[in-house]
Amino acid sequence: MSVYANQQRRVRASVSAVLQRLFVLVEEAPPDLPVTAAWTVADTMAHLAGVAAMGLGLVRSVPPDLPVPALLQWRERTTVDSISVMNAEVLRCYTERRVPVLSARLRDDVQAVLRAAEHTGPDHEVRWLGDARLPVDGLLAHLLNELNIHAWDIAKALSVPWVIDPADAALFVDLFLVGMTRRGYGNLLDRDGAVYPGRVSVTLRHMFGPDVTLALVAGRVVVEPPDPRPDVRLSFDPAAFTLMMFGRMGRGRAVLTRKVIVGGRRPWLLPIFLRTMRLPS
Image (cartoon, rainbow, N blue to C red):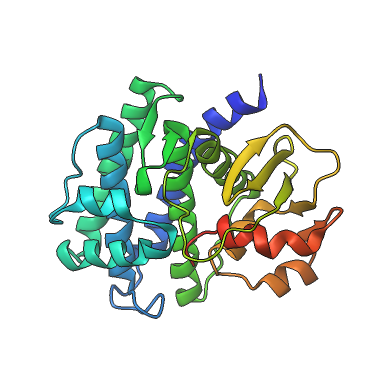
């Protein structure tokens, strides 16, 4: 069986498994326990319920079942740098904060997303935030990452461990990041400022799939054939990489612990690449 076929099977199984671990985690958690600077446990669960509801709407090609005025317009014009504004608007309008109610909705919507994904097939394309295009499996990989990242936040607030399986985190890189870049990310990565005039190639390397080369060309990131001599070679533990990219682990710590290793012909160009290929933190 191919690596991609294995990833397709794994993402579905992992979404269900991580969801169940999350429910165990929050069962005894105080709803008003601060999890981040702005969110409590209840807020975090409401956010995840909103993510699942929006994912279900995308797979079914219907408006999300959320009480947020102009949500479709928000979705179209959102960029990486304004996702936090959209998230805040969703939480302002979606006022449910009873954790058992949120857990029940999250369970129902995730199960419905998985059923709908089976019906459409893995390569069915959806229009995501900022008019980005991605396959359904990329949408599932994003949902899996959201469950893991926010469960990690809750676990940290509770002073208990939350282990992110690196093979699951690799799905976010391969199915979501690369899948969306290959299909076209619309205006999701738009930003102010001058466009770097040169070309920067970055090869991503982890142990759970083949190397992938991304290139920044005229301000846009594209997927290219594997480059044996890229400007930057980024070798990483996928769990540490996603925590780093979402601001949960410092870049210095990731590098010093060798969870992320930067090499290549011109590794100093990595910050230029990451100014465009960035994630919300």
